[in-house]
Length: 165
Image 1: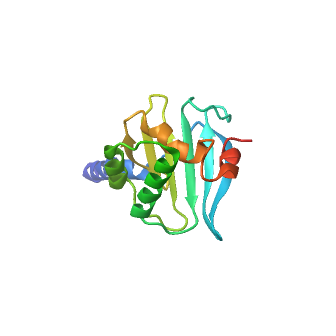
Image 2 (image 1 turned 60 degrees about the vertical axis):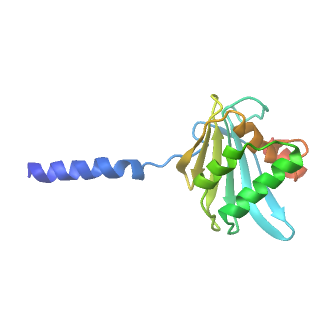
Image 3 (image 1 turned 180 degrees about the vertical axis):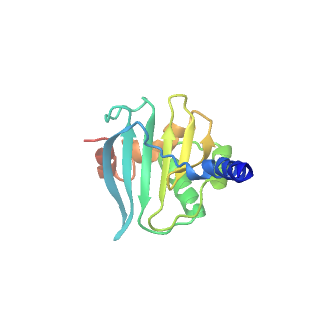
């Protein structure tokens, strides 16, 4: 009987990290949300979170949660990210792209991809509420969030909604 409990306890210890889920918005409050559309298609719903539910550009932690309504490949996500950075005049570091390629999966309709930029500047990525990994460069998080939050973003209406305006 003791051996049975010992084996059971060992199995629980092995499985526990996989059973624990996390999410980017833990301990944060919703600032705003909106829908990203492209032509006639709903691409994703976006939600922005902050410590007190108010947006302040350089105050962290902040989290951005994207709930996808279409399938999209990892490569297409990275291409869109690079394209937006170029459009915004943000110089992407080569290691950012290799890190994103290693972290991001292909997205299916119903999936959630989220980022939490910590007070330390470290960016934590989550996929369906399970942490994927981190990008430690403190310049990455603000550059990534700028895709949605910059005053000259591709979708000013979505930016205003996310900022709670």
